[in-house]
Amino acid sequence: MSSINTKMKAEKRAMDKNDQELIQRTIDEGIETAWDRLEKQLPQCGYGSLGVCCNRCLMGPCRIDPFEDEGPTKGVCGADADLIVARNYMADLACGAASHSDHGREVVEVLLATAEGKSDGYKIKDTEKLNSVAKEYGIEINGRNKEDVAKDVATKMLEEFGTLKNSIQFMKRAPEKTQKMWVDAGIMPRGIDREIVDAMHRVHMGVGADYKNIILHCSKTSLSDGWGGSMMATECGDILFGTPEPLESTMNLAVLSKDKVNITLHGHNPVLSEMVLEAVKDPDLKKLAIEKGAKGINLVGVCCTGNELLMRHGIPLAGPMLDQELIIATGAVEADIVDYQCVFPSIVSTAKCFHTKIITTSEKMKIPGGIYKEFKSESAFTTAKEIVKIAIENYPNRNHERVQIPEKPMKVVVGFSEESIRKMLGGSYKPLIDAIVSGKIKGAVGVVGCTNPKVKQDYGNITLEKELIKRNILVLATGCGAIGGGKAGLMLPEAAELAGDGLKSVCKALGIPPLLHMGSCVENARILIMAANIAKELGVGIEDLPLAGASPELYSEKGFSIAQYFASSGIFTVSGVPLKIFGSQNVTDFMTDEMENYVGATLAVEPDPVKAADLIEAVIEKKRKKLGI
Ligand code: SF4
Ligand code: MSK
Image (cartoon, rainbow, N blue to C red; front, side, top):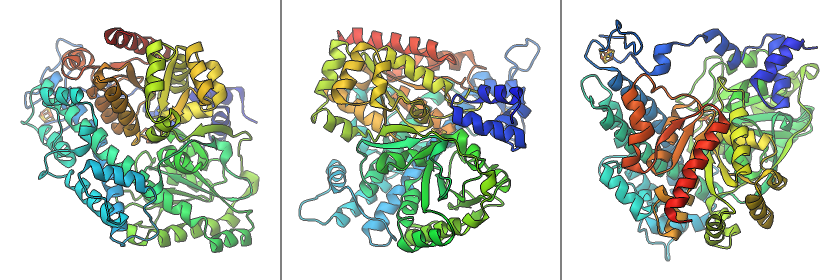
């Protein structure tokens, strides 16, 4: 029985009752989690939090004290607070853009291998999307088989990572006005790797010294991620695995099964998770699970790869990034299969408290103590079956007396790709535009990104989402931020009752929830495509639309890139967690104010989600006024 203190501590850490139940268990049984480790880190370094610590070269580390007249104002090389803050921000952002875009590259490579008949188990599922992407690239589709077309598409995309082509095709998806804005600001990206490498070049000692120039290159780098690598990941994911359509499923820790082999998939790239999904359908493996005493195999997603499995196939989703240790702490997971990004290195220690096996699959992400099964496209299905077999064979090791799975999974309706939203509206955005013009819907906000132990899990995301829908603002959610809303019931059509009258009437007419789940953090690209298509239908730029972005519980470097490419696409964006920029007044002023002159939008930081909703509503009203609606 948990003490009152433990219960109170758990309530402070997470909104969701199921999460609280497992947090209590981790506290009672001394199973260390990110929340415990955060406590041990406190107080965190003020220099680091403000972005004024530079550890870039061996003349340092150096730090600037922005509050003390006596403290140093320059690093050994002469860099001041503006430069150190801007450079640190760019290095973090480039890391995030690289992570997203390298994931994108790997999906494109699997498409190429599949087109060449060199992959194991993959198929081209969405020929319609393949053809429409091919047309954008000027690739002939008539009279050609899908493999030949796919080979050309993948090859053309891979060319956009390097330096020879000097342009990214999907930038042309934006309205001309927005494209001109990028050209005028000097931030039209030339290539994906090119901009990331350029960013890392600029942060070297003795290169970039102008903070404004650095922040503008952050915009350029992030655009190459959002409209380049991440968009390719999304489009090629759809071509290979299908474009999502609305469907029903369930969410939260209760999706784990008491009597089946539980396999959790955590990380980001669907090239792994889709193949594990195929493997669990194998009749021999199903038979083996029964022989081992289980009633079957239960595959569930975690975090963003979970979002993609949920969107495309309705595979239940156990929880966001911060739930990864709680999921293992149920004692019911036979294998946690991971690829990369947002996977705590500590999960191997968590797993040691139970029988769970941690299986890593990417050459980039090995964890000491985990089982490494290298996953390659040419042997994907075979490896996936081997991994599933390891999980099944681990079932007899489960101690059923230690299993603690919460009772009530939450129903969700998900799968709102840009295509499915357009189809639902009758083929064009006109009905949505009419609703926006009439004021029934004031605008839309992409609530995206992470969970972070510095914020009570899901509090920022759910509070902002509820505030927005109450104010007749449609929410488009992705990443771990989406999962909070799902767990709270906001992904059900009935949640329309929580919306303002205008949004409620639109949701009821269409039978949709007021919060549309649009996928993983890489699939923010779907929001960009939707914004671009609405702007083109209206004959304006994205920067003119009553749109905003928010990441109330941001933690990740990828999130910096997302925030920057949203803002650089003309979409005002609020982070709920302070960015590490406040050590420089100049950088802060540029990003929160002057940047509007270049890209038509700014970034903001507002930890209080209700105040964040106020900021967003004010920007949406301003844009509506400018549009004359
Ligand atoms: Fe110090 Fe300059 Fe080296 Fe940074 S780059 S550690 S500020 S000397
Ligand atoms: S996983 S980057 S915590 S969304 Fe995409 Fe979730 Fe943020 Fe990782």
